[in-house]
Length: 167
Ligand code: AR6
Image (tube, rainbow, N blue to C red; front, top):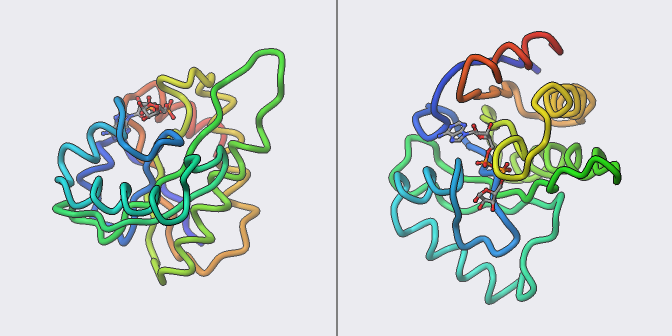
């Protein structure tokens, strides 16, 4: 598998699937989640609502992932995953790694060859960038998957250099 690191906006990526740093409600929010719903259009939210009604009455658990259409985005699918809120006292690294493993498992089920990830949990959920980069890269490297390219799409230079230092 090829791992690439790029500076950019995940909503513009020409890949099979983009990963959304969602919350357990699956009903949208700020940050990357807000951008994906805004640019992808209402078809994404409509599928999220159906998923809530059919399978996730209590919401999607932290560390799990589920796919919907990507609506008007160039990607074909959005894989929604729920990152852990950072805690300085409770080590939640396994949950952050799980977001990456579960997203790649869903990508395999879909037959997605190229998958773009944002820096999950590093915005509103407060995870320090260097630590998140180390966990995300290690999780992707250790994954058993048929995905051919994982692209981390970093939103600013600080995030890009944190990922570059861990790669
Ligand atoms: N493309 C790539 N990266 C982005 C983009 C974008 N368009 N927009 C923001 N980022 P966050 P979280 C970066 O807060 O910490 C939402 O409300 C951003 O700079 O989006 O997992 C959800 O609904 C940061 O580095 O996600 C949840 O409630 C990274 O994406 C909660 O936020 C993740 O920031 C999830 O928080």
